Length: 314
Length: 288
Image (cartoon, rainbow over all chains, first blue to last red; front, side, top):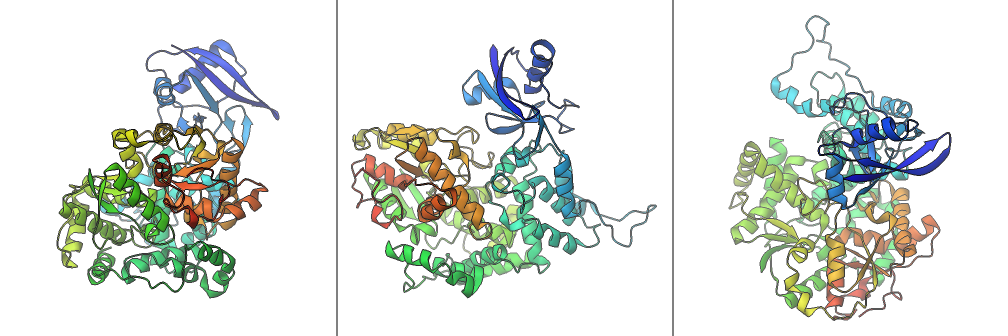
């Protein structure tokens, strides 16, 4: 089967698309197809790769809008998914491009430093004895240590696409959760403060990072665990946390969201008063009525008991 | 076809038109809905960030009530679907966690445990799998109108939990719009997240993307946008004016709930589907 790779080229500021026809054989990966182009059709095409075994994370690219680890994904998987023999290949999204499919990791390395990406061990640590940890404690963060820093998670991150300045890359939050959940860490609270500054609550919860991680690490889940940790460490005095808490409390108080009070409980009286024009707009079409009484679930005692019991257990 | 219906909070509040149109459409096409008694909020994709185990136990309770009814669960909200299906996925794949959660339910006095016997599905998925429910009732009311199909995020991802179709290349909504007599149009921002869940914490970015989605759909010729998620609908409809301002656009589009579009295709009027409760595109909807 011949497959056309429609590849985004970029050399010294000049950008164009170029088509290459590759004879695809059974089991051929996207990386092998790119290597075919370089060896047989166009030696000027640039891309990065190293291990070819889904370990080094060097070869992620974007195919038809979705990040893929090119050494792992088969061309035929993608032609079947998109029902086409023409695939568009671009560099990862939300990265600065150096040339063609090669992206610049230097700015990302500078960004991840914001969350203090190294363990600061407890005083019990010595080079000879290390820190003691049970298998159960190890298992709490083991998954996140599997990040190969391929950059797939940030490629389609909706928040990063809009504005990278006040929100870090999902892999940075994965690293932060790995270290926060590590019982050898001396001061998780300090790192959590940095994580909050790095935009923890600005995540859109779009799940793109989780969908794209080739190691199935669930970066969106890591972000949720970090949020939970900020409550445990008393760092929940911000709009995002108050909003989540207001929703959480509604479950125990009535069983259902009380939309008319959600903004006041999230932002406070003053800020939410600035939203009066929106409230009026909604009242005009019957979407909001401050006079409506909020119903209380007849089983609210049981619901409260479930939440309280879970809080004790957790 | 009968389901235990999980309406979710917004259908009982700001998006009441989504509830009433769902009832009318289901009655017309022979889907019987029995509301899950005394259901609670699914956590709205926020509760797990406060206390994960509590959020999980609350949804285990919701699902267990439907199991006791002996019915599969139907939702019509992406986020409710994701929250409930995530709870089910975790409980079904982790016996120790299931035991722990069931102990919590029992200690709190909830009468039945989570068992894992009820499937959880979304209205879009039911319509996609069972076109025979409505095909013989579809009128020519949509006249091939150009429709922007906006899935939202939580009906597509993560793949192991939301596995009706390939989340990287979904087609169910376009297929449904064609079956209803509309014409799906491709638009660049179709896979962008509406940002609803970060509206307060990242307001400027969220309004920008709201504007981008509506503007992109309008520029590609869409004359209405349809979504299977009431939260996406609220974001795009309620904040459409601010979105326009953020991206300097003049695009005005009616933003319809999935079941409203089905209702129109079956010959219902704008009044029938509760379009008077919408904020945006009021003059632009030329159907019904």
